[in-house]
Length: 120
Image (cartoon, rainbow, N blue to C red; front, top):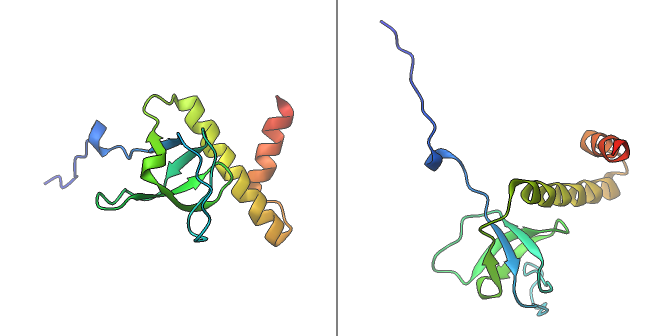
């Protein structure tokens, strides 16, 4: 008796990455968990939005994690894969840079990124 489990992948099984773009400036800095930002800044949502909340939990292009008011941002629905990968790479580079500043060492990812950038 063959007991293999058959799995299929459908479009609904693929995790979605939600990107946001600010349409207004937000400079109120009352809480360190809330990000300040200018118009046209991009964010990647890192937690599914709570339908009852007025805030999204995101990471910005600078590698900062925090909350943004949902009334100041819009979903970017037509971002192509190249733009998405550039945004994610930018965020990862900033996080690597922060890690490097704390630990004073280069990560494997930083070395590979430098090799790719220099080759271009």
